[in-house]
Length: 293
Image (cartoon, rainbow, N blue to C red; front, side, top):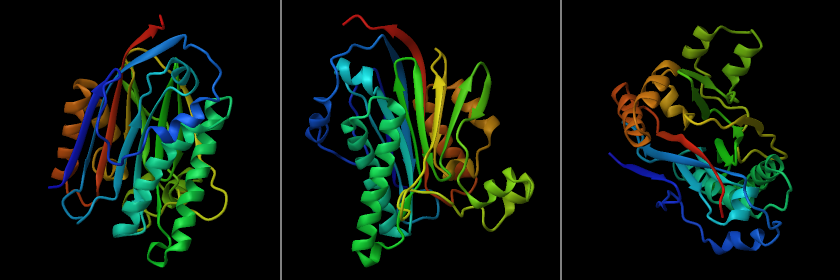
């Protein structure tokens, strides 16, 4: 079984699923005003991706960036993301890798004054890059990727989402899906056309309606949440949520440290069939610390 895991906390460095050069980001940082963060969220996190029991390659990716420069932390914070490639075999894998690498670079290079605009611009620029490559190479036509990402900036979390990968917030013993799936059946459920029960068995349940790689302008959903100590965030691909329900996500992420929770999520999805790639990021807010320089 081909799998990859990373764990961390504070400013510890990790290997990620796709490399990028730090110098690619630095030119954008010079544009930031010299400011200091008021608060720093202290995060403990772990991510794991697995090929599953059926697929012959892994089109899922995760990545993150946690800067140390005070001005960058104040302006952009730490970014965590998951992506699920579409388009089949090599094309889907390339799309998710490109999505992760370009999202981080564009986000931290953005001259936007606010986080939401920087996230939106980064997503749309990433979409343009993936779409351009798909149009240039015949074998990669139609490739794309879902995207769910979260930027932890001082005492706020900012999220951007396309497709059916999800972000969950666990707080005070309850779980809430923050994002909404961009899928055909979920949109039919929200419109009252079909029931939740029918959606779960629909042959169209994996048809997504928005993604990275779509021609033209792409419109990600944006969300903002307050950070509270004790919060746990779960970012995941549909390879997890196909087999693990919300209550199980609450129980596992709420009962175990991020590294063990991520491992249990993968094992549970694989044990129930694992017919898709599985990726999960578990991020625990341990402290909100006043910045002291």
